[in-house]
Length: 146
Ligand code: AMP
Image 1 (cartoon, rainbow, N blue to C red):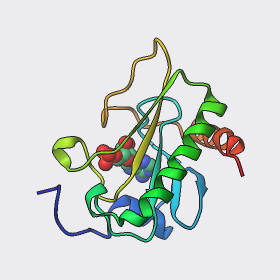
Image 2: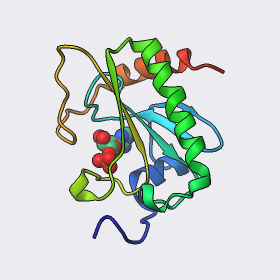
Image 3: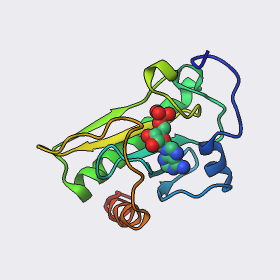
């Protein structure tokens, strides 16, 4: 069952965290790394991924680390609003395959919404142009408060 089980250290986010796979990084600190989603549901869709954990989902993450994870999520959300000027923002995460989870390392989605622009379906978006993602990541990083 995907909701409970053992952590697979070969998942793509674990590889990104180990530097074995690329990502379009926005920022990182001791607790998290944030990077662009390569199949964005909207312009500026990004992910916040906790480091140094084998949490597959929210239920097995250390509760004392939740504050740092959501502080980073808030910081990035504010930077996205400042950089990309969306009309709304979805902050979400999925637990277990039937809920939509495909990568079993805990992560939070930040998905900007723009009035009159439809949202791509989860997992059905097209792969993004990497140069476009890099440009967005640069703008978002530039809007981060220090
Ligand atoms: P979830 O379905 O909640 O597990 O979300 C996983 C997300 O990771 C999806 O939105 C994918 O588009 C995204 N994704 C998959 N592989 C990569 C990757 N190599 N770099 C960035 N995002 C990825």
